Length: 193
Image (cartoon, rainbow, N blue to C red; front, side):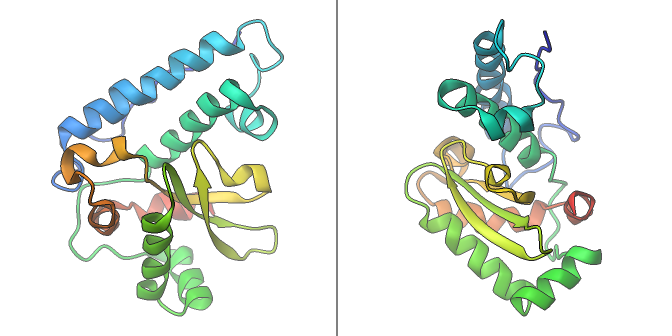
């Protein structure tokens, strides 16, 4: 059986401050994500899912298996797309060109993406993905949803579950979303293209 493990962060626990505090990262990565990993390993033992990749599980499962696998896949993408804060952090490379071509400007894209995250009711994720035609799309996914279930290739995601921001921002989700742009590693987004 394939055992899933908690991903190692590619940066120190305090590297994202003040955007995401060491305390938030400790709870979010070390407690919430660890619980999803533990739960999934328990749920898939002896089932058809035990040797599947996370993406395969997310595409085919439902119920608790889907929820835990989806949260692992989502969080793995989320935590690996960051670097230390940069005040004027903007897209580079191919993703910058695509954003300009398809949204008009980075500012227009950022506004639409942030609005989708701020207006998602309840818990979930906002995603930038690319479809089969090479078009960028922004989607809202509730709970453990991931765009791979719709045939999209995810590039960038913001977690809008309260555990992602409540320690640092309380109920100010829009402030959290606005701050995240400082820590996006656009090289990682380009690699996902």
